[in-house]
Length: 519
Image (cartoon, rainbow, N blue to C red; front, top):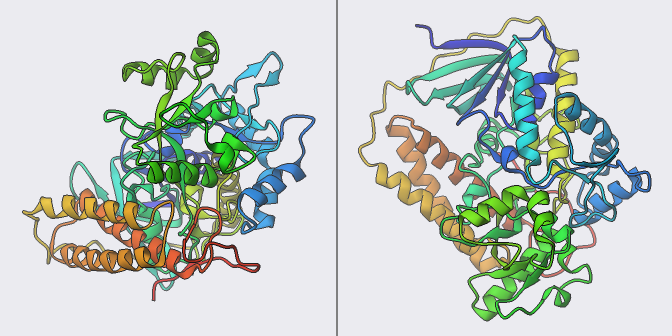
């Protein structure tokens, strides 16, 4: 049996950005979508909140652009932001054509507000927007005969010849074979890297795979110091990083200390609706100063039936854990949530390596700057996936693919020490949480750098002598992405947005992006 596949387009990742790219590509192209778990498993599926767009007659593009720039602490790329905002209403239409039915009040969208927005502009499907988008996009992809879906296939490395990308080496998790997927165009849609932190709202798939592979291939990786910590992850031993949507605060939920006191007034005039970096730092500070394990989010003053209909997913999960949110406050903590940096791209999702594209959280389009505004992430996925697909449709050539050498595993042996991988994985996440967290300092960052460099050395030695497994692939990517995050954080000599360094507490008047390229 040949272990080669050839496609016009290889899409690595099956979230909203990957699936949207697939269904927007021409029917004349052969397309592979590979998912390292089940097709629907990933951050997109768990996105509760919504997708931002100017849909209210009293709202306007300029306001959405301004809010995004301000929330990103003026580090965002205005051209990219404007492109995303102006294409947002069409993104909503595209999703509706795919079958998504947004919550409405009669003939109007039931728009809500989230942190950073100055108007109601977040369209949602109750509190399971991502799930609805994923399920409907997948149904569309399955209808197209030119799209082939591969579940439980893990990309190992990109294939780069003569400085151009021609696909990827991919591990079939079931057969344990490494296959060659060669392609004329490759789209990274692998999501973010928040699993590099001990506490995260992300599913297990978010291990920075696309970022690490792109870095090894020679891509520019931009602004990785900006990890967004979601302020409110449910604090419960059995919750496994269950997110409590920002929309609760948009609908009036209050943050409280264990004794019932409010505290956000000490940090920002916008209170609970301040941007996420401010709310997360406020919670982090209260926990550290007072020695609390968590703070509380109270919604019990709302009518029980309304809570149940507006937040069915959250209500149900909390009831399973013995919490009735209509009667008691929820215990919450901040958790790593979103990677604002990534593979540097233009508005057509092109990286600096020909034939290689990146869409969604893996990409740095410039729309988030130093802090992502709530509900701009699903929007970014849909808008840039579409522009990526249109560009590929218009630029696909008939040139034959070069011959790609098969994967060579003749010099490696199966590992008998899986405990090493588990130990190093845990050590990375502990280091990142304790030394590269919500509040940073030069000493902590330098200490993290030394520890992470040593772990990278160990992982690379391990990788050279043992057979590749999914755990080893993820560990290697996690170690490399963590190293990029630490070095990016050390190189930024100011505090801006999500990056707060006690040794440089102020913003610089003039600043620029942090760009890392493999030397």
